[in-house]
Length: 423
Image (cartoon, rainbow, N blue to C red):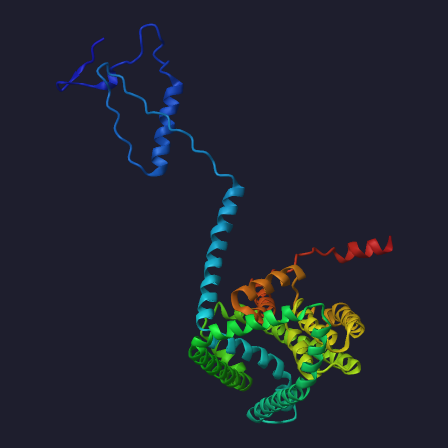
């Protein structure tokens, strides 16, 4: 069948692609469906479709069917989203820790000043209730703290100097009672002398390092003192200025997160001070009754060790036990250990739940991990500051999201409720 001519051209619409043995309407419906699917997919992706040129026989080739892509499981999508977010937070935390380590002469005094401010704020508040001006109340509080610290250190040093000869004599007698021969002692003494002589060439370097460390410690103490005075005097205005610098939509969240974080920090430092005083009193009374020398230095070590949860009191108590054993013998050491065990039980079951547990709402497993990580990253200072600041950060993150409205509970009509009561 020939196509009619239209202006010297043959139109392709008149050419039939059906064979003689097939019906004209049977033109591979499945293949046409595939071609239509490819065209729809190309249009949905926005890619331009190439024109289909008929071959020599006049048959228009159909498009190749696309390979189906493997669908991503929803669980894998969620894990990937959590993964990159946690990785980003880890990198940010690592960078902040690196900055804090590099600027330790600023970060450590700032952390100490925050703890001291949380501890001394109730004293300033009490003085202001008695109509004492804020500046005068701050000055009296800080001067009182300095007087207490200087007086305690003076007393400790005096007692240590006075009791050091007695402890030296008792330690010498205890060493002689040990099953060690004189030859072994002489050999150990020779090794110590050789070690000291080998390091005599670096004496100048050691002196310079000591002076540098002393200057850094003095600078840190002065900066801590200055920051504490500033925070006690103008802490509220400083916090208001920080919040005012944020966008207006973020200010309610900042206020909502800052208050519980400060409460956790304040509750931890006050409760820990009370527990440390309790430990110090028990240890001081026990050592004095047993007649152990160096009661004042050991009491101060126990007080400072109480600020490190789980391990601080144990280490300080172990040192006191060794001194007791060396000076008063095995029986006194056993008595002291029993007293320490009772003291730790009272702390764990009475003091910690009521004084610190309601503020530091962290599981002991988390506390152990946090202390270990803080000691590895920041040494003794990291172990001291790990728990309170972790508890404060957890409280802040908990209160950052917007509060959810309470679920709606439909109320029954009054007539229906009265009928239920009658029935």
